[in-house]
Length: 97
Image 1: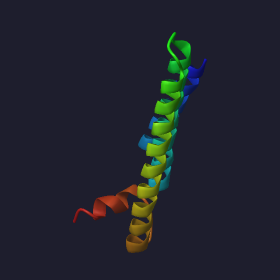
Image 2: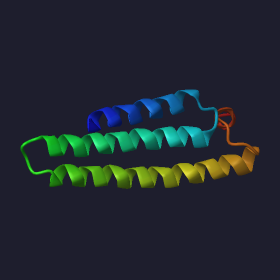
Image 3: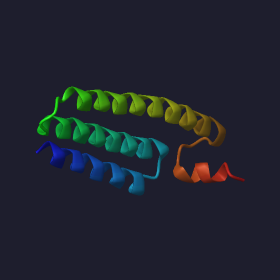
Image 4: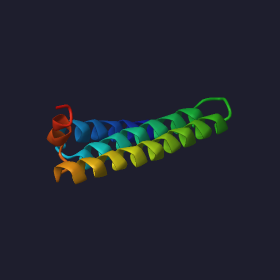
C-alpha cells in the first residue's frame, strides 16, 4: 500500500515537472518525487526481515537532501525573478544568451 502511495507521488512529481510552466511548479514536482522516494525507502525497509532503522535513516537523508535542494532552488528562482521580472521556465532559457 505504501509503495503505491510512493508511486503516486512519483507520478505526480513527473507530471509537475513536465507540464508546469513556472520554476516554482517544477520545484514542487521535484519535492514530490523526493518525498515519494523517501516513502518507498522507508516502506521497503519495514517490509524486509532486517532492522528498519537503516531505511529510516536513509529516508531522513533523502529529506535532508530535499531541504538543501529546495533552499538552493528557491535562491535561484529569486535571482531569476529579480533579473527577468518573472519566474517562468522560458526565462531560464534566456540566461544562456
